[in-house]
Image (cartoon, rainbow over all chains, first blue to last red; front, side):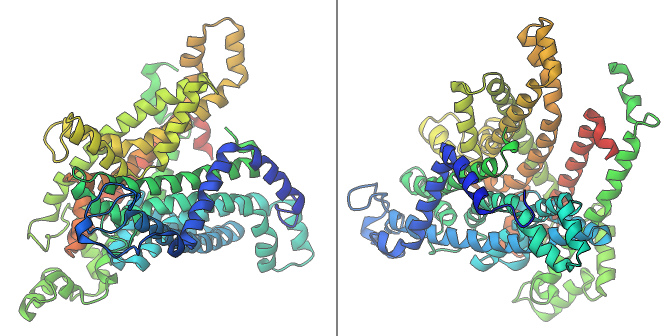
Length: 287
Length: 322
């Protein structure tokens, strides 16, 4: 690890070389790229408008006209799943960014200054972590109320402790290192030490956590929408689509199959890519 | 270490276990305080007059005033909080706004159901996860290893609610082996428990595999093998015992996550659990129900974590001195 950041050009090359040899990670990366591509180009890729249905074509099985079939309102499922990628990506990016920024700041401050401030921050994180899994997000929705914006906030707050803990751990292990002491000795300000020395050197675990969190946030957000607490109909969100499909499980199982498959593939993509990144950035962590 | 001596080891002078437990309990207090504060604040954070929120927007002014008085909403906040906590400690979570029953009565039934469901899930997850993890580690890079790790990837990537729907579609609708929902017999719980336990099984399998692989590489295992001990004894007597230490923590955590995640399974299979009670409470603006569910689930999770930490320290003495 060098003094001004882990990811110098030579090291990026080394990480990429290791990543390239990891077939699972490359597979995951391709799924993620495809997902982002579909999300960006949804209007050009989807054969029908996502919210326009034809009631004479309700619950049609997959056919040439509708590759994934139609839903209970006669809307094209393929188009809804394609537009759903947009909603999912939007939720993931915003939620993970909220957690990334707040969690990283809290972790850096706690880890660097230590003492009471650190204690206070970590106890706050413990309180958030006292609500198991999706239960924390549900509790936040209970306060904020259902809806897309609140869903993103809930999924974001839900992920703050993970970032805070990881960054804190990294900062604590780094702050006693010689290069930080040297920076202090030459009179660098705390703010510079935090953002020019400690943050760049903590990038590896932050990048890995960001990727893996994209998966968790998608599972949480679609779960909340499935419960009716997140994105509301007619927005084509995958979890909400599944909730709608429950009533038609016997007559039209494809309505439940397609959005679920989409969630699983994307989550899998981020998990594979995140695991691969972790192995490439720090090969010692493997197995 | 003789079995008969174990209880005394817990508080043996100088081994740090008693001090460790006290320290952990002490660390718990601010968390429980925070949890109670969040649950209490719920009613005051939601925009609007708490009395109107509880009475309903179209209630007449006399009723709103009565609710304000009944719930002490006219008192200063710190007094309200004090009342809230002192009632909760005595098991009084208030009265449900919608069906006028004591919250504790509704919570008790629903919570016990969720605990039962989570318990069956962790049993299934533990059984599948441990066996898959152990075999995978002893036959690293074999077909079984690859298949079980792919299975684990599916386990952590599949949404619980979707997996539940698929199980229902295959085993209830097509094969008719299990009922599609509701409660009554153990058969009603099998599919929901599998759906809820899948990701736990995956995490336990991965953790067991990684932990076993690390232990198998240690010198004392090599020595045991060199001494001519049978492979079965080396793995199941020597390696497994030490490899299980970090897995214990995962069991506790996963059980806790199941308590939280159960809400999704309960919704898919129309089961009367505490998660569902809370979500219905949110829709019906039945705040005492929501507060009670939040408090109960979070407190249980915190206590499960405490027990897990104590178990971990019991198995691995190094933890006590950190």
